[in-house]
Image (cartoon, rainbow over all chains, first blue to last red):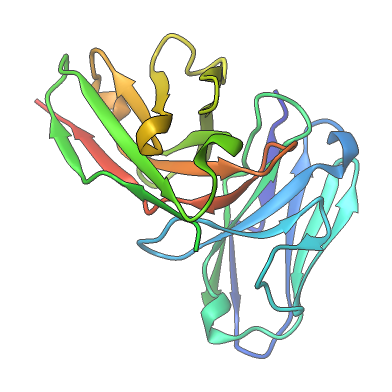
Length: 108
Length: 119
């Protein structure tokens, strides 16, 4: 089973700043099959990025994903108030399809 | 508009049975795999298993194999997650998800069903 470790656990930033979230895999993720999800309180997660770098439908271009192998990054270029949430990465290259433990992006 | 609408919150006792539902609309229900994801209190997400409603082909995560049963009724566009004997450790939020064709990531999520198991 591939274990995904997200860092930091909590990231405190101000609107307008840039956020960089990390997701590290215990072994190489086949095909860069990595997704990112955003979860706000009381809601189900929302797909943000798939294939490590492709934005999902309706996701603003301030969100970008990168990486391959074992190291992946989600960047948000200029934080808007609605971006503050918990973000999860998920690998779907190998069963079981595992998630990271999440990074909470909070307003500073 | 694609929607996955889940059944309401449940409070159960250990040993009881339970069946959660997830109704899909706004797309061809039989053409997409539907899965379930668990989120225990204060914890991350865990993929449980998935079903193809057209033929009921079902796959389970090893951690959940034998612990739950996933099924679907394509005539009413509804998928199910069921337990025959609940444990306190089944207390969690459960999400149904739609799998993107050909890949195991999920483009639509239900609103979640909170299951509380307590004596």
